[in-house]
Length: 307
Image (tube, rainbow, N blue to C red; front, side, top):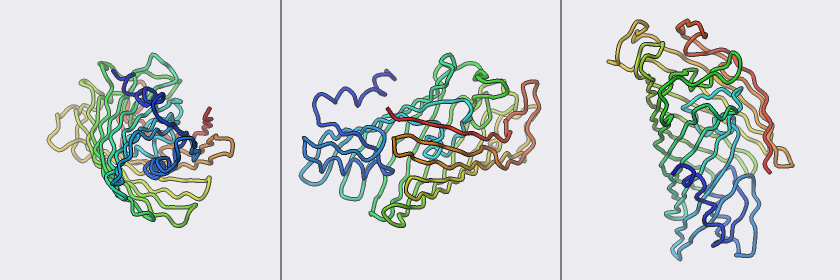
């Protein structure tokens, strides 16, 4: 079923005029494609968007598929922190519905795959709406992530690196409410803001000794032409009234800040440089495999090529 959902856009390719695109604003991209004549192709960036239908009243329906690097996905999925050194990729599919000239709704699914195919995948889903007034846009969405059929900690893929979520190999699932906004400074630059609140559920018997963590995240991004940068701050603490354990303390809190810069290259490539946990606070639980949550400072350099 998950393969069918993630491959859904391909099923419609024989019936419609497909264009290769994905602008920084996918809703704007879909609208631009729907304005194209059937024999025209719209090349506005990496990814694939497929217009399915457009009504006389301005409503439209489109499908979008993308295969991003983990770094690109982190900017769009601020609540969760994946380790960039785990060389993961993110495959996503979205159904977008234009309710009018300024309002769009979307529902989508995503899958995080690791360099080691034996590692459990993380499947996400999101439903939300965005109001786009041209120069600025605001959106709200509800998302969820889970590790299907996982009954053990996520394995270590690289020496000293734990491919968990938020530095927690005992990650089981999460839900979060997200808010996003963008202000266009001109045709080539803009400012992005994001915020989220949610809960992270851990596997039974995890080393923190708690079942649920409350999480909050804030993100700030700036882009100018092919260059973009972002800063993401997160904080986690045990849920009030959660299951107590040996390490439980309602006053405990873990915070971190990530920084990253991405350069979109002329040949459809992306070069990303940054560091996770540039600053962190909170006393982690010491274990034989290392502290949990793992808040070690992790610099990275990633290159992604669209084919």
